[in-house]
Length: 72
Image (tube, rainbow, N blue to C red):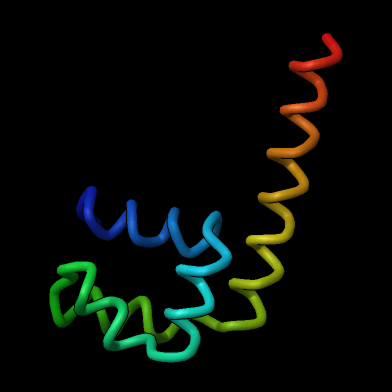
């Protein structure tokens, strides 16, 4: 994995709009991010339901951390 690939995945997990664009046109969005053909194939194989589930979990974790920091 490369920093570019990792950054793309992070955006998918944290950015609702980026995730929506990716789910609508996965190969196009991955290519636009500058990923290699191998990386595009890998990211396009991601289970969309799993991606949504994980992104919701990460959002809850970020919100809890923010609340803890703010209240702490």
